[in-house]
Length: 291
Image 1 (spheres, rainbow, N blue to C red):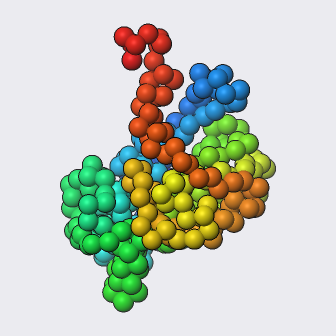
Image 2 (image 1 turned 60 degrees about the horizontal axis):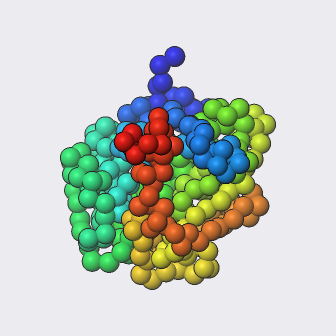
C-alpha cells in the first residue's frame, strides 16, 4: 500500500481531527537497517533508523508536519523558529507546503550552511543575530508571545507529537521495542518524543519499553553536567545547545526507562569517522579499492 504520510498513517495516535489539514511531503516510513558487521563485532543486534531520507534530510520533518498542520488549522499565517540547521530547512519546507510564511532566526556563523540553503530555497525569511542558539530561541519565544506567529521549535508540543512516530515505526519494524534506544541529544526534544511514543504504543499494543540512552557532546553536555553551558561548542552543530528546552522531559525519559545520559568526549572523532564506518559496514569488500 502506498505510504500516505504520518498524519494519515498514524492518525489515531496523533492530535488530528476533521479540521486538521493532512499535510505531507511523504515524511516517515524510513528504513531500519541491521548493521551486520558491527553487530557481529560488538556481540549485539544493532540497527540504525535512517532518518536522513526524510524530505529535508532529518527527523525534524516528523514533528514539523504536525506543528505546521496545527498552525494552519488554528488560522496562523506565519511560523517562526530558531535554528542551527535542520529545523530551519524543515520549517521552511512545510510552511511552503502549507502556504504559510516562515521566519528563521539563526546564530550568526553557527549554522549548517547546507540546511540554511534549503530554508532560503523554500522561501524563508532569514534573520541572523549575534549570539548562540539558546539566545535565538529565547528571542523567538518572546516574539511568539506578543506577535501573531506560531513558534515551531520543539517547545511546541505538536513537534513532539509528530516526532514520536519514529518510535511507532521501530516497533512495527522490529515487532516490538528494542532493548536500548541510543540517540544524540541537543535540545532534547527527540529523546523525549521517542519515549512518549514507546509508552503510548506499549499501552496500546504491548510492544514493550526500551532503556533510553542519550548522548551529549562534551562541549554541550548540559544534562550530563547538571547545569547550562553558557558557550556550547562542538563540531556537531545540530546539538550545539547549552540549555536544552526539553531538559526535564529528557531527564524523565532517562529515569523512567532506567537509561543513561552519556557524555561523548569522542563526538568529533565519531562524526569525522562516520562515513568511513558506514562504508566499512555496507561495502561489498574490505579491500580499500572497494571503499
